[in-house]
Image 1 (cartoon, rainbow, N blue to C red):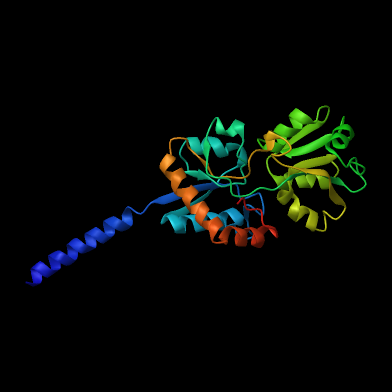
Image 2: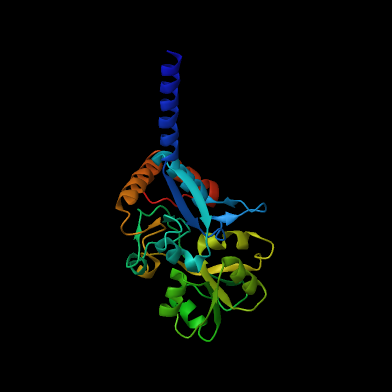
Length: 263
């Protein structure tokens, strides 16, 4: 009798172990250098809006999140090479990127801003045409492999475009006068403009979105491999739930100070 009981217990333990081992893991690639979407704190921990959102989506889909740090310009190649399963790195859904990968429903949208010194080359710029005229022959910084680089090269002729690996590197050169202006997402500028170093700087002209030019895309989404249709459906459903119950708005206000969610 004891032997039978032990056999049943052992079998149950094996079933439980098998169930635990088969729990699905979602590996999420992020940059860790684009606050407040994603950043690395003083202890080396990844933090930010997308880190919290990734964990929330994993909870709702009953998956375990594994967050993997990846340099921005290698983000899509690493996804295609299966280093991770999804990209959550402030990546906008654009026609160009949709040729390579799939995306979830967009979950956040904010405008792009041109920033320069308050008494700098853009001080009198109010329209995009003003900006285009003011930046002819001037140096403009932008993070490489972004929609902002694409826009500068296509729509601001005559500007000298200087590429950076991270937003922080761009900010540093702007602060030290090595470039005349920069273009980035408004939230990417947030920490710099609020800092002591950023007090002498401001954004000029209109905030630019996909409504102004398709280069800016449909908003930020989760990048996925095209063949992972089941994962896309699962994440889209979870995004709908996070939007419907107010969690997306709560996370957005917590990290950005405004609601950037797409209803």
